[in-house]
Image (cartoon, helix red, strand yellow):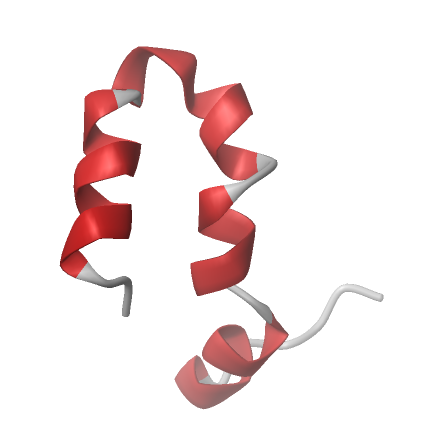
Length: 43
C-alpha cells in the first residue's frame, strides 16, 4: 500500500485523477502489486 503521505496527496488531488495516475499511483500500483492480487497481465 501507499504511505500515509502519498495517500493524502492522491486524495487531495482527486479531481485530477489523470495527473495522479501518471505519478504517485504508478509507484504504488505497480506490476508487483497486481501480481500479488493474482490478476492476469494484458501485455
